[in-house]
Amino acid sequence: MSQQLTPEQIEKLKALGIDVGSENQVATPSVEPVVETPKLEIPPQPEKISSPKKPIPKVFPLLSISGLTVLSFGGIILFKSKNSAINTVTPPVSHSQNQVHSNQDQPTPTQVPKSIQHYLLASQQYFSQALELQNSKTADLTASQQTVNLINQSIVTASSAIKEFPQDYRGYYQRAKIYQSLVNAKPEFITQTIADLSFAQRLNPSSPDITHDLASAYAHKGDAQNTIAYLAQTVSLDPTKAQNFYDLAKIQQQAGFIPQALDTYNHLLSLITDPTQKTQVEQEKSALEKLVAQTPKTTTMPTPSPIKSDIQLPDNPPTLQAMANDTGLIIAAPETGTKISVENVTDSNALSGTAILPAKEKSLTIKNTNLSDKSQVYVTIVTGGKNQTLQVLSKDKDSFTVGLDTAINEAINFKWWIIN
Image (cartoon, rainbow, N blue to C red):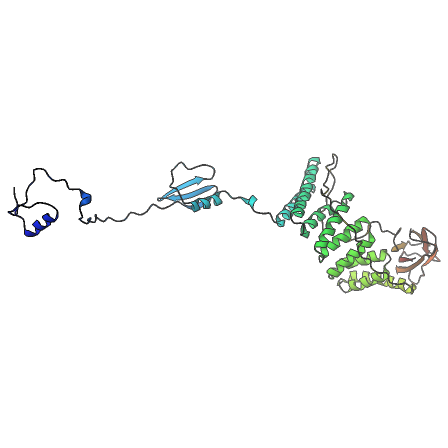
């Protein structure tokens, strides 16, 4: 069947390579020609436009609680345990996202350098636990051994602070306070206490707490010279604490530094507001002034400086050894600002002191190792014995005797002073 074509259609068919008959009819071939699509130059027609599909969202962590990670994938909420894998297949995420999950799910605190505060806090916690365990009502042999272990852990931890931060005074001071709490039960620790305090004081020479603790340590050792020297530094660094002045004046007086003791009492009176305490200090000062008045040729003795020595710290600091039958008190809570007194400075070896002549007693003998043939002994009444004259009746190499011409019915409190 033939079909009449228009001129425009004929031209288009010729352009496509299709032969057109002379009668302007399309020749119908016996075999339909195969037209290769790639050779056609007809511009491609746009396909039917459909609404764009929403892209599949990536995996984002929404929340992490108690080991469960909440994930959102295509609107589905998944829970992933940190300890077990998810059975549901999830699309891959980028490298940066994997890194975020790795940092969140696997923290690595051991990679963070420990600060000195970490060691100090841990050491103090061990010490506090030991003190609490020791003071518990159920303390027994087992508790005592646990206390020893905790104290040793406290010492070792403070030693780690010193090793990691050798230029920070706090590590030495922490360990010194631990040893200082042990010296009453373990006197052998006094050497280590002084060594640690000395290193702390070198690194922080402006701390009155450290110099006070050094004075206390030397007082426990029986070293009056260093006790006075470090107490003098303490009141210089912190001239506001009355107790430090009072301790210094008493030890100066015992050691024979009477003019210095008077000067210290004068500073102390300016700090005291309590009337009773002020009266007591004024009596102490008045008695010393009487002693000085009796010895006009007395020269002022210089306040000693701390004895400098090459103190070395041991490579392995000492620790407590658990005793099989040790269930008693072994540690004491360290306190700053407590009263200081030199333990082995007594009336028997001091250059100054106090004594009481009992009522109805005519005389009192005081032993003292500082006496010599050239020694001068002076006494003055502090309280009691009104209108009485107390005097030195006799003295020899090891003692002196103080008394009245006639015994009275009242006790007499007096001070004495030896000048060599």
